[in-house]
Structure formats: structure tokens, C-alpha cells
Image (cartoon, rainbow, N blue to C red; front, side, top):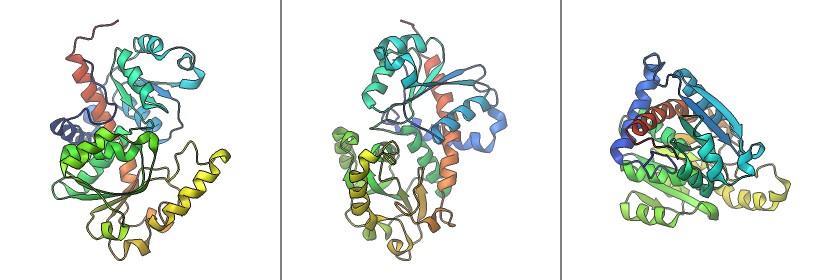
Length: 314
């Protein structure tokens, strides 16, 4: 069975912790890893726009001696032919694939028929690479996961799903203040496991959360592909109206000073007050930078795990 990263639920506690630890080591000593992926090829498939995912993966593989090939899903034959046929061909031309697609089912199909590891670079249900960077940032700041409380404030979406999976695996307490749920993102099995773990708690009040949290995490209220879509304006207005009382701002922080997180892109004046983005408690840019470092670690992990498999080609 080939190693893939599709949700973050694939990784047990020890594996997840080791990837994060290696990410920190790579960040501190990048020169030691300049040849870690010598001549390895990364195929990057994009159906959604991207800044951090594109830049961090391409920079990361290049800095470790490999190379990246970028392909637009909709202008390639992936949009014309069943995924299984294109996946079988494309995976014969690379050593790993990263796909940023609209539907989780398409990511699963890609992984099923790929001969190489597949990384989910974001879909409607999960964003595991973002969660890896989030968790690495938390560990960097606190030096431990023990006794840490994180609060996620926003829409229940793909980002929070992978964050939930990571927090459950590592034993991090996560408070969810999520008045709106993206239906396409909801994962009942994940949430039932999360509730049973005892690490996940849903709160209706932001004021209750800020009193007990070490980190507070904001995310966009409108998915990036819809933010400037005039056909989505009515739903966008509805979300802004419902979510504005939950904005991360000085008033809602009520004198408390947790570390501030955001996965970007940021819409200042919506999910977070502009003055807080670059405040002394903000770790937003560190969080974004850590995408590259922890993904370097992930790539090394997948290459090593894949080398230990059969490597049979269909």
C-alpha cells in the first residue's frame, strides 16, 4: 500500500510528531538537506488558485535538490478523461504528486490509481499540509503540545477538519467556535472520533473561549474561489452578517493576549481586525513560512516510506 497524505488521519501520533520535529530541524539547518531529494520530481496539479501551496512546495523541493512541474488541471487532459487513466500515466513521470483540487473524491481517485505518493494540497474536505504547518508553529512557540489549548473561530471547513485530526492525534485541546458549517466539508466519522477523544469541544461563545486559550486561529468566512464571485454575493453577505460578531478584534479579546493565527489569504476587517495581523502576538507569517519547512519533512517521509514498499507499476 502506497503512502499518501489525504486528510492527516493517515498519520499516527509518533509519525506526525516526527514529521513536525524534522520540519523544525530542517528549518534550523537547511544546508544539511540540500541533497535530500536529489533528482526527485514533484508534479503539482492545480484546479484551485494558490499562493502558499504553490510557492512552498516548489521552493521546498528545489531547495532539497529536486524539481517541480506545474500543471493546470483544467487545461490538461485530467479535465477530459477519467482520472484513473491520467493518474496512471502522470505518476510514471514523477516521484510524488501534490494536487490542489475542488473535490475530495477526486483526490481519493487520484491516489487510488497513482504509482507514487499523493499529497492533498487542499480540497473541499481537508487541508492536511496547512494543519502540519499549524501544529509545527504551535510546537515552536510553546516547545510542547502538552497542556496547550487552541481555539478555531470561523466556518467549519476543510482547514479545521485536518486541524481536528492533528489535535486528536497529538493530544492538543481544540475549542471550536464555528457558527456556520460548510456542508461539503462535514465529516461525520471524523467528528464522532473527535468527540470521543475528549480533546475537541464546541463552544457557542467567543468570550468563553478567549479566557482559556493559548492560540486563537481565524480563517476566511468565504472560500477563496467564491470571494469575488457575484453569483455568491447573497451567501457572502449572509456569512459576513452572521460572523462579524465573532471577528478577532481587541474588543472580543477582552484584554486577553493569545497568540494569533491565520492560514491566509487574509481579508482584513472581516475575520480579523487589521491592527492585529502584525501585532506582537501574531505568528501568522511564521505559520505561513512553516508550510515550506514541514512540507520538506513530509516529502522526505513519503519518499522513505514509498521506498520501503513494493513500488509495483500497473
